[in-house]
Image 1 (tube, rainbow, N blue to C red):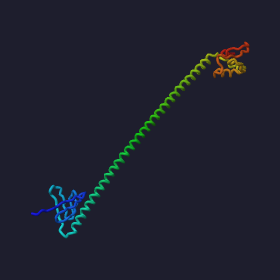
Image 2 (image 1 turned 45 degrees about the vertical axis):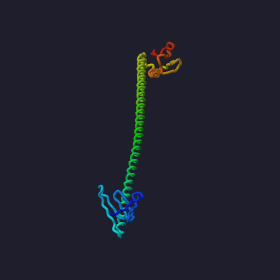
Image 3 (image 1 turned 45 degrees about the horizontal axis):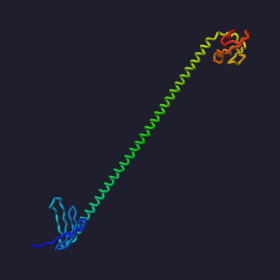
Length: 222
């Protein structure tokens, strides 16, 4: 039975220096296994079960091939990590962009809804003002027409109360006193028109040539 000296000096990041009584070698340990200048091992995932292989003395191709394989695998893993990281960053960027777009669209929708509500409010207010104005115009027109009709009725009643005028005196010239001012001479037909259109009222007078005095316009007769 012989005593065997073996020690591993850890250099960091899985790289170590293997010291033994026979030789000195370097190896790298990963979660998939380890490889070095003396051989390699592959972990199976089952505790205590792994595959180990040592290089033969004088064989220089196998160690370099193993190193190339492990380096390729490491580079591939790094590339996969980089791709995954890029995808994660892209997903986060897309998510942030989507959130920002949603916020912008929400704000625009709020502004649009507010503007639409204000327009509808102003439109309703304008329609109300127009309706009130039309109603006021209708009421004013009704009152005006009612007054006109009332005046026409009063005028018709006043004309009906006048005595019958003899139109055979159409050639006679007559002077009238309208509101204290003498006007004329007028023909009888002109005085009749003035009475009908309201130019002469019940308070006006005409000059009676026979009696030589002023008489109310309502008493004009032959």
